[in-house]
Amino acid sequence: MPTTPPPIPPSGATPADDMFGSLDASLSSVSEASLQASLIDIQRRAPAPRDPRNDESYDKLIRRLLNFHPTSTADLALKLDEIYFVVDFVRDELMRTNAALVEMKPPVMICGDTHVASNELFHCHQFTIIIDQFPGQYSDLIRLLDYCGWPPDRRYLFLGDYVDRGPFSIETVCLVFLLRLRYPNDFFILRGNHETSMINRVYGFYEENKRRYGSSTGMRLWARFQLAFDCLPIAALVDRRIFCMHGGLSPELQSFDQIRTLVLPFMIPNQCCLVTDLLWSDPFPGIYGYIKSNRGVSYLFGEDVVHKFCKDHGVDLVVRAHQVVQQGYEFFADRKLVTVFSAPNYCGEFNNSAGMIFIAENLKCSILELRPDKRRPSIV
Image 1 (cartoon, helix red, strand yellow):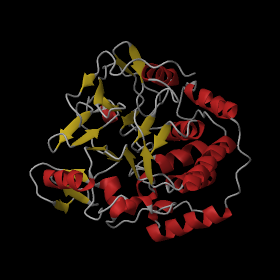
Image 2 (cartoon, helix red, strand yellow):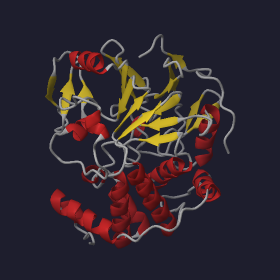
Image 3 (cartoon, one colour):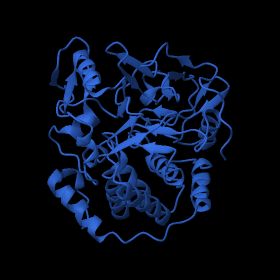
Image 4 (cartoon, helix red, strand yellow):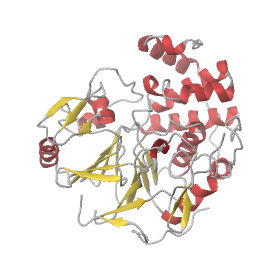
């Protein structure tokens, strides 16, 4: 499955010039406190996972996902017990490492949001890819990874948002989880704001679980996923110089030790806090300091915040996702911050490119801009 990766950046990439109990059927109406209590109860009663399987078994499930060619949204790639196996083992692995802050060495390929609202194929240069929701032609994902390099030949960091806004979120997140299990030193995943129960119960993932696995079983499966999501790391540091997260900076972040010492699992509260900000905040031009976000959660922050943060913490670059940007990447604060968004033609509406950032061993950055084509086969 892995192949020798090509040099970075590939033909067509845009290089940067410089370094930059049970849950009832009316779940949607219950309070967040009641929901979290139900999740805790399910975690206490969840059966212990089976003995670990070897790498060949992981590869078998990965191959099945990558060769999944559904003809309708009712098609299933994995059996229910296989999904439980994946979710339980990734949860246990994340709890074992208990790392809210992932600290890694370059080189690494950084990818932003990876969910889309429709099943679309995109033809980028010499290969066809599905960057994000991975529906339908999973062979296109293989081509992408063959082109950029499979782990362990290429190291990856994904910045969150693996579910919602598409009919095959279960396959997407299971594939991401399996790659994390199979390549623990070369495939890293962070938590996005959609990996929270209050969001993915509204934006599609909860309904997908019920639709595809039945109401009662689907609710329990959805709840099982939340237990794994609560164990996902919140941020990453690349060589102590590049700070990565899904959302943005926080007025409460004074030291990286605040993230290092977070105990997982961590349930995201509704009100502002350090973790909420790291998953939700956004940069905004023309303002000074922090102001309340128009999202209704967390903050917007100005260029001055980025400059001060980088100076105070010895950081050269902040990499985040969370917002659609037309070229797949967008700089802010004199290239001290970059937004990367890896979902091409997001929701079938924006005609945006997908972006990925490659961090070389010397911390030089190359930006890969993958442009969508207008051909959009879909699955009903």
